[in-house]
Image 1 (cartoon, rainbow, N blue to C red):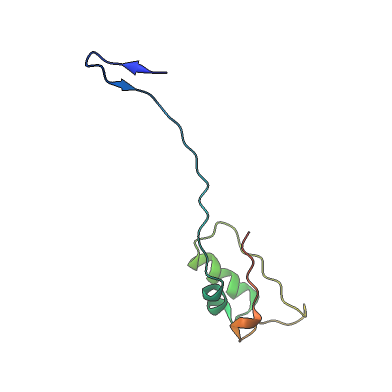
Image 2: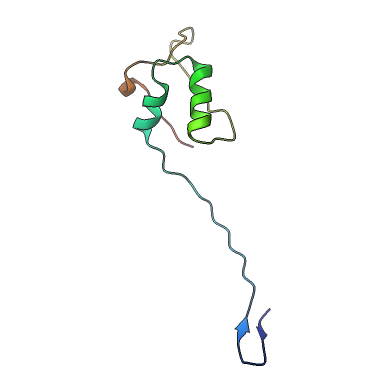
Length: 79
């Protein structure tokens, strides 16, 4: 809907939408969680990255309780 006022200025309404995806450093994420238990690592990531959902963390073997101490042993996948 274009509208022109008495001075000849034309205005219109526009609606824009954009998906914003943050840039996340895999190295930084790994350093935040290295050596932590899963629940602690999830809370750290949730706080540091201001996440709405709890991040998914998988450890192999499944009975192991801690993330690796060496950050290069941690694979970070951003979805």
